[in-house]
Image (cartoon, rainbow, N blue to C red):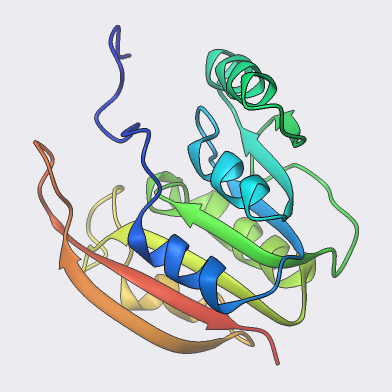
Length: 178
C-alpha cells in the first residue's frame, strides 16, 4: 500500500493516448484500472463519454472529485475488472494502462473475453503493460497473454522502458476489432 501518490499516478496522460484522441472522433470510452481518473478526464475534455473502473475505493473517490472540479461528466464504478458487467459492444475505445499486467493468471482469460465483448466493431483496445517475455512472473504480459485477445487484431506494438523507479521493459499495444 502506498501512503503517498503511487509512482504510476503521474497526473499526466501519456502521448500515446493524446495521439489517439487527436486522430479519432469522440465516442464511448472505458478506462480499466482508471485510478484517480487522469485519463478519464483527458478523454472527457476531448468530448468522449467515459466510464472508469477501479477496485480501489479511494482512487475512485479521488477520480470523482477531480472530475467534478474540472466540471466534466464521467461514470465511475468500483469493482473487479474481471467481474464487472457492461452491455455488449458498448465502447469505441477501451484503455488499460497497467491493469491487465497485474492480474493473476486466472483472471486474465475472463478479462480478455470481456474486453472483446465490450468493444464495438472497428473499436480500439489500447493496452500498456510491463513485459514478461517468459511468462514466469505474475507481473507483466507475455506473448501467450497477447494471444488471449484474439479475435482482436494487433495493429501496432511499440516497445519501450517503463519510466521511473520501477523501470522495466514495457510496450504499448493497439488492437482493433474487425
